[in-house]
Image (cartoon, rainbow, N blue to C red; front, side):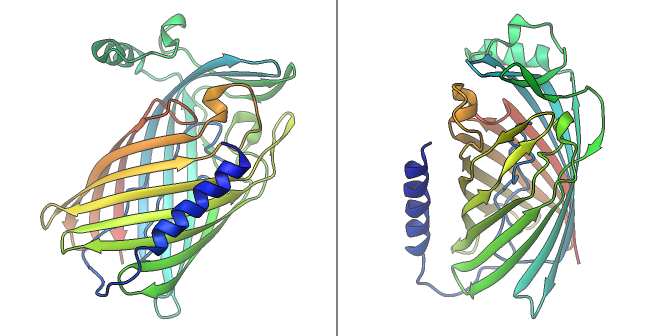
Length: 329
């Protein structure tokens, strides 16, 4: 996506959000979007945006995201060699301040890249539905590969089975309109705490800003809209690579199926932080479609589940599966 197209994309989303203004009455009982972030290994540590609720809360979340990625492509300057599965554990804490109008959040990710065990299942899945396998069958099953080369110099060289800290993020959310639709602004700083040589971070300070809107439909449906931008600098690994700022947007629907179960559908889109690599899978926008829900154990405890697919076969894992636990206080 070009910078001009990026700007038009963001303006369109903001105008659509503005059109939602007008009705009153905040709908309660909703738990917000599912905790799903793009787990594509090369984008994971560059701002790592995800769809979030405009309304703040006091909560602690522990989430596990498991994904499979296959990308073996070479262009004139670049060679991307990724055949791996990734496990990401996120610890998130959110706390309200100043009369509940400001939420401060802390996100601590722990990452592990490994050879995995799903190649046989994915081969059968793709074959059964006639989906392309991206060339996965050309490599040995469940064999680990994580290497990025630029102009014959290694940028990232990952190792299988390591467990390491990722880039820690601090976020601030401020409510600006607290009726319906509920509107907030959000900003974050992502600190370079992860090792970029192994793909656990990008070695740079990343920031983001976003507009968040919650819009209720009746008593049992809540919609969520995010439009934002991530500001980044470079990938400072074994070689320093310049990166581009990028835009992202998201929409989600939460349906209160019963008093204990809510069901969610979410769609996420983001631009690529890499400059023209000549490889479509890296350069084009990433789109992710997700389904899942939450089960209410009691008024303050919830279990979360999700399944996500890469709908543009670019900039995202082949699939992602998530489990989570939330405690509200």
